[in-house]
Amino acid sequence: MLVEGITLEQATDDLLTYLMMSSEMAERGGFCCSDETLNCLFDMTRRSDRSNFVFFPTDCPHREKNGWTADAALSAEHMLLHLDASESLKEWMRGIAKAQRADGALPGIIPTAGWGFDWGNGPAWDCVCVYLPYYCYKYDGDTQIIKENRTLIKQYLTYVDGHLDENGLLAIGLGDWCQPDHEERGILAPLVLTDSAMVWDIARKAAHLFRVVGDADGAAYAQELAQRMRHAIRTHLIDLDTMIAVGECQTSQALIVDMDLLDEAEKPKAVEKLVEYIHNQDDHLYCGVIGARHIFHVLAAYGYVDLALIMITRTDYPAYGMWVAEGATTLAEEFIPSGGEHTSRNHHFWGDIASLFMQELAGLRPNPLVRSVREYAIQPRFAENLQHAAAWFLSPFGKVSVNWHREDEAVVLTVCAPEEISGVICLSDGYHTTDGAQSWQLSSGTYRLVR
Image (tube, rainbow, N blue to C red; front, side, top):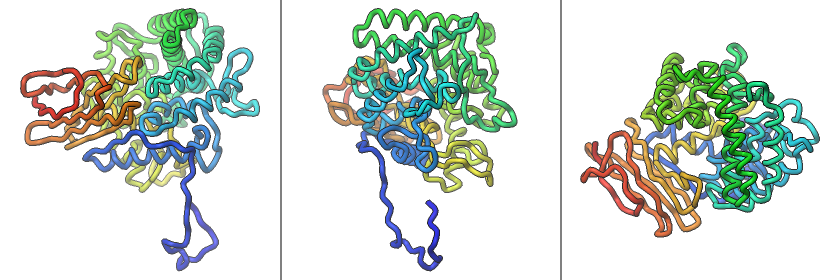
């Protein structure tokens, strides 16, 4: 905040009063751990989310204040994990439906006076039309938002289907936005990969939503489009001998793994290549916002959670920890070298790390199969540099919480959940209970884990 017109002597702590303004969204999830940089980043994400949410999620509260669709799509999951934003998102979806053009196209900002159809959109932005209903259903069990937007989703699927090239691929919009050094190096992930991968993901999520509300015809069409897209991507954009995607970069490799464009047996080889690309950058993040939404989850899932935390917490360019070291209180729009000028110091679209912290580090995963808000998976990643981690989430049936801490050579895991909650506790990284169990039915209790 910049204040002008006062002297240094007048600038006392009690001179000014400021008010925090946002849509009314109760906190319904949280995270903390032994690493203060991670705690600070979680708080920064929450602050950016809330200050950028007045009726709908905006790109920055001080400059444009526009409803950029990609920003909301990238942030929907982590916002819903710690803020009760579903009613506001549901209302904004009604505005998205009204902004849709007759041919099914969506603009990049909503509301719009017409700007954003010819530049500023594309599948990585347009995916908001499916991602918001999908995550509202996942975390709230809300089917109304699906039913209200079936026509919107079908029209969009028909629109992108009609724009596929002779190989069944798409490249019509914006790509991996805000990649570090993009002005000098160009965007490393080819647009044809990011666009096509997003269409595959939009279509498969749409098929799931249509099945939820009993729309068999919609589900069949969306599933058929998804299968065509996956086949085209695997045929033209992935070398299935080496498991290397076009672009040969962090974003490309992270997408093909996390978006299930590879079969399970193919993924480890692709992850090895991803780790190689990361090491080639001295363990720095060289993704834009699309790649960053996926890369850390891939690393955590395949045994590289410590590498993910190194990338996040380091304090040299480009890294999240650099913002913390500079004294930032919100997430910036871009990673800028020290001494450089920021266009915005308050954006939320890098904030998926909050989801990573809750779901991977603490291991609290609501509705992991996206079929019932009663189901949870508890699967923490015990990062070597963490002494403890904890997360909580307010389900429709009460608070669910996970807490683990190191004790001598063991890890003590405590889980609390209402009786209505079911699911599984599943250990990774070689941990098991003292009687040898690595997975068991979810129930409240404290468990001593060893390797």
